[in-house]
Image (cartoon, rainbow, N blue to C red; front, side, top):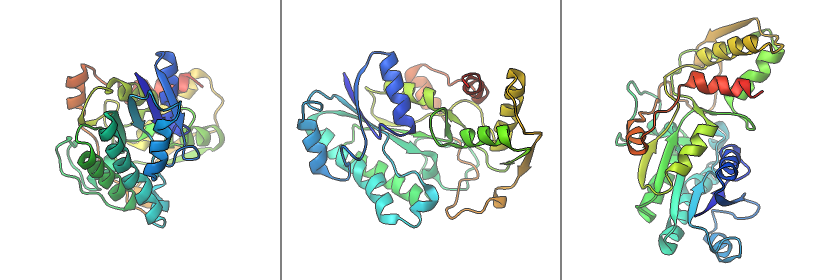
Length: 286
């Protein structure tokens, strides 16, 4: 088994690299500077190169993830989020490779009331969500044996994410304002990386996130408590819950888009640890 991690310099790709190293899994990472996934010719050329000839699995972590900028950069978001997965699907089909593709809870839109199952219809709102959903569909049309993993609110060390942003504010600001009306399931990037590798032999759509629905407000409160318990010097004296309307954004965000993870729990025989446990590990690693 040799894994090609696309988007290897990104947040999830970097976590995957560390897990592969720890588990002694042969891998190679690339960014767009090495292989532009929107170009089938570049993908084929890479797979014919000495580094690419013995690849057996592709884990696609490359994505256009700037949700607001996507509204202004529609063509680029489409190429990276929709066309690139399709290209990988066609080439994986021709070469009999396994593909695991990372997707998002945003494919379900903004008005959920119950945890979303893999079989629920998508209703994406906004360019980012629509291009990610189209990417899923194009990949499966090109290669029905592909594996798609949807996740939500990914956080961890070494990347730009809301938990890392909270961390900086807790250390440096007396008051932290955090959204209280959006509910979801957070996902620790380390746990996600391990699951992506565990699905190396699977096909179909799966949902993964840490256990328990929560809000950014509750996460911020937990972080403050853990940092105080650890003796970290912080400036934050108060976490203030606010409505999402207090932070106007170009693109719509889901108010509720929690993912049902029962399918992956049954398939892999695992129960995701709670978001509280994951946040605790994140803080203790500081």
